[in-house]
Length: 213
Length: 110
Image (tube, rainbow over all chains, first blue to last red; front, top):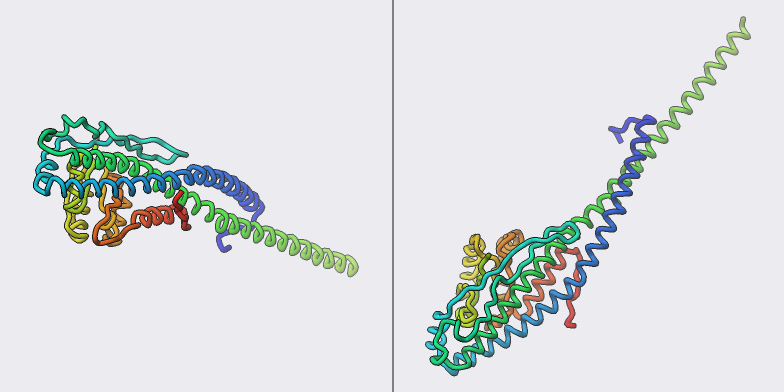
């Protein structure tokens, strides 16, 4: 309270600030609600995708074990190293509620035809083809997961930031300003009473002097 | 255009090689940690997928680094190993949500 000047203009200024802070808080609260509405379905979707990825991985691992058992480790090894191609992703950006969010898209489909895989189709059994297909599915799901998980994270961070701001305004800034207004108000009152008292005192003196004369 | 890179155990590595992604192998979590640090440096990597068992074993410093990095985006792979750590993926997501909203959100199955 030390650095508050108890003057009328200061009082008006603080009141203005309180109004502004309240407005800001309302806006931020609305933003928070909107973010939460975006956020909740994403949690759901992330969870669903995660489960799909878990199932696909278990599947693929089983297929891989089978392929290894049928074809042998050496064949599997040589085929896997012979496989050509690489998987690329495209990362672009978008905005959700003013939050920059990367959008991850697969650049080209890794599901190749059997002929393009890079190994001889007559040389290896169907087990290996199946395994390759299953793992390609995992890669697809993985890319989708990366997209949705980043979205979840970015929106979450923004949500947290907004929350913190709302709390700061609600619990610190506004109460402090109100306290200051109260202080200024009471000081002004006090000063008015002092003035009043002083006038009375002066009046008494004047009356006494007149009586003496 | 960015690469998709997978860091996994030597057994599963064959499978991912068949899928045509860039594969790095690690025998144990300690080696994986080393690899993760190295792979995070790579500018051309868009997505880095790591076995959830490996992700579970990394220390706080690397974890913070992963979370602070814009690219590559690290995703956990629910590959089952002898080491266990099944369900770490869900814990990873729950941690993510917890940090984001400040309270725990229960993630249900359907």
